Length: 349
Image (cartoon, rainbow, N blue to C red; front, side, top):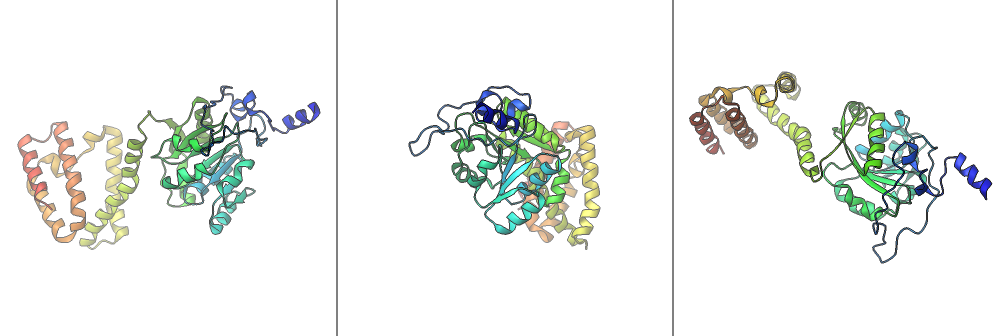
């Protein structure tokens, strides 16, 4: 028996991951695992996960074997980035056969499954890259083995949504790349230099920081209770910005510009404004008619938008109100002029 145990240990297989030889210890982190009393209780009235599974496939000192659930935009990009960084992706899971084939092409050698629960025996760290609304169902379909960890990639939901998957000696967290996943290869490139918001206890957070560093990103831990605000800001910076670009292109079309022409002309101005904000701060980067108190110019804009781009008018009004507040805070807009502008905006719709 001792001989068999020695052979297993040499192969990196640990029968008792809570003994300090699980993946966290291999990375030089604290030996203690959070046992989360009761977290592994079966909702149907069972009890804590009754056995420890010899799931460990990573040799001591090596990165854990990763399994990724979800074949949409995020999962394949993360899988490709991890494999290229030397982290093993042992299994992937998605119900869509076409996505499974595409995913396997990006992470050669990974086993492919239709169901999330099926990959649990092949990996050490599970990444759920599924839509936010699907997280409770997917987490509820999985039971982790002691020594394993699970994280999700949602920017809006806390790690606690994964608690149904827990057993004694398991860990949960989150790993949210602040990247626009519109195209797999572009996203893989964008991960280099990106910020990744992580959640987890100190041991898991250290592992996730290592994973972020491996793909060229920087990990940050969010303040408790701040995740929804963090994600709302991210949506404004991504989807909100695309909506703004769409409004800009709509107005550009009035002048005869196609979408590419608008992006070429106004994109340069956007880049200059962002550079100014980085160099000077947001308040000082504000320019335009509102900082100059040009009430007539503002009225002309509103009239033109009512005629040519009424769908974009509410967006312009909302942004102008924010600009007025910024200009007042900076001290460049007189209160009486600010009031005139606000009255114009109120009458715009």
